[in-house]
Image (cartoon, rainbow, N blue to C red; front, side):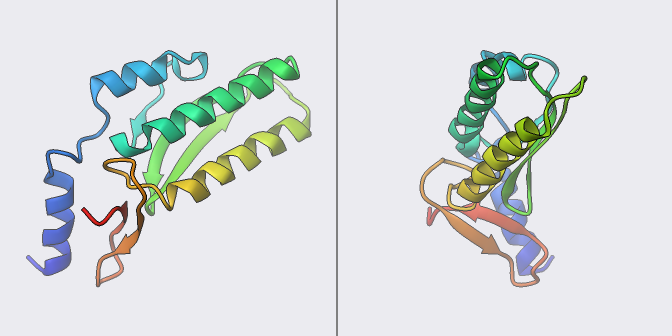
Amino acid sequence: MNNDEKTRLAIINSKHNRILTDENKARLKELEIFKDKVPFQFKNGWVDLVYEIGKDITELCKLVNCELPVIERVKSKYATLWVDYYFNSKVPPIIEKFIDSLLYEAEDKSERICEVCGKEGKLRVTKSGYWYFTLCNK
């Protein structure tokens, strides 16, 4: 096993690096936008960020009186937050642009938030360039 693989396994197996706790899942499910069977595939450090994006999208949709989008998945990909969504009916294109801009902002923020603990972090790449993580110095 090479050093990159050892680093990746150490991060994955860390007791602080679990996928969302039940408490954090329950917090996110308090928001209507996340109540359905949304797969959360990110770590506890990004819960506040995901909660805020859920609140912002909900407020936007209430403001313009449109349905909430269906969130297909919220995940970490290449050490940044990704949210996949769609609408069941037609909404004005400007609404999708606003939601996309909120998601781009959250993606940008996720590059500076530790995935594990939520403190200030930075992008870490293993020497092989194969594994990406956003982590603090801890």
